[in-house]
Structures are given as C-alpha cells and as structure tokens.
Image (cartoon, rainbow, N blue to C red; front, side, top):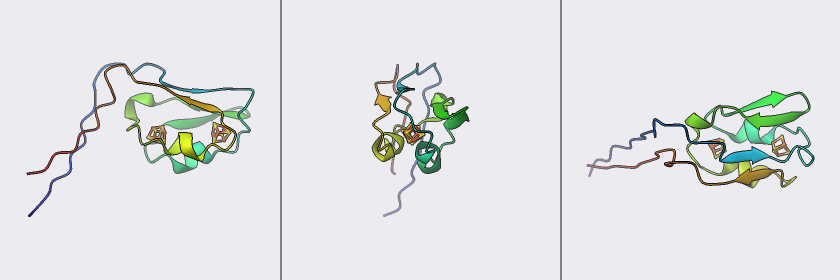
Length: 86
Ligand code: SF4
Ligand code: SF4
C-alpha cells in the first residue's frame, strides 16, 4: 500500500500561541536548533518565535527548553497540520 503524506497550512493569522518568558530564557538557542520550520530567531540575548505561521505544532521547542521559558498555547484555527493517505 502506498501512502502520500501531505501538510496543509491554515492561511490565517495563528496568533502568538508560542510565547517566551523573557526572564527565564537563557538564550541557549536550543529551540531554534531543534525547530525544523525556521520559526525562531535570536533577539539580543533571548530567542523569539517570529515565524509562527510556519509552525507545525511539533512541540520540539517546548520540550527541549530546559529553562521552562516557553508557553505553548492553542493557535487560532490551528496551524493546519494534516496527514492524508490514499
Ligand atoms: S530553548 Fe528556551 S531558554 Fe533556550 S533560547 Fe529557547 S526559549 Fe530560551
Ligand atoms: S512547535 Fe515545532 S515547528 Fe513549531 S516552533 Fe516549536 S519546534 Fe518549531
């Protein structure tokens, strides 16, 4: 059986569903390193999720942040990750 994997994106503004607690962020950059979607960018001594429309909600940034500096919420409308097969 053959499978085709497809990722669709919600086209609207997902909102700021991932936030960084600035006082907790150590600037280690692990969030950016483990994000496969290029969502994160350094902003001085901390990192910020600046490209949330490309996020696929994998949770890697949230799990890898040992400083507990990331708040992970629900995007407006979802980000649209969808797996189909046929
Ligand atoms: S992994 Fe956490 S502590 Fe490290 S830069 Fe990212 S948000 Fe900051
Ligand atoms: S949830 Fe995944 S895709 Fe989204 S910002 Fe975090 S690591 Fe990147």
